[in-house]
Image 1: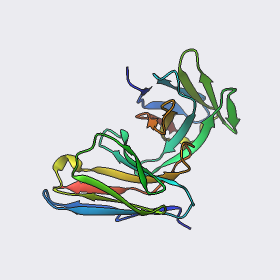
Image 2: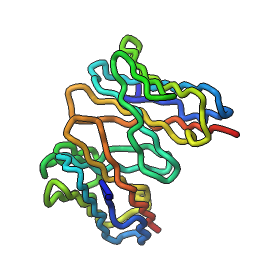
Image 3: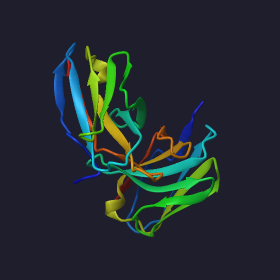
Length: 112
Length: 110
């Protein structure tokens, strides 16, 4: 049973395109996250949703828009992709404030 | 000072060796601490929590030093399979945010 799943696993696209990444968790967690891990392996939080409400919104270009249709899903839409957006994007879930994260397998985004 | 800092390594150690990493944090109000492990091209996975009194899980021991604001991870009798990047995670006191360190890379050599 997959606890946190993401699709797609790999995404190769050209600059200027718009793309979406989907995430689902079946752990019953109330909080979901998007993290970006760049080439230097720094894992940086982008957004967090608790019970469908945005609670963390880091300094991220507004080309990135998260959407949480329900507690089990958190999607990430990226407009006008740029070269610097190339990274691995991890979805994660937890109970709020617990620190016990379950991560998805990551989406490796390459912008050419 | 960065919120969470780790020596990136790599730490190259022979099998059977004992190795320790530290992670320093800047927010004195931080209350929760964890170690995660990330294998190459994989997602991070929880290794262990770090309790005030320290805790041990098999060959792994985690400790907290509040006075000096760092946590440590000690691995005894290193195995080849311990080769990975070890990330410390620290709560930003009074917030929902947890900050990940950049990780310390460990290579256990045969």
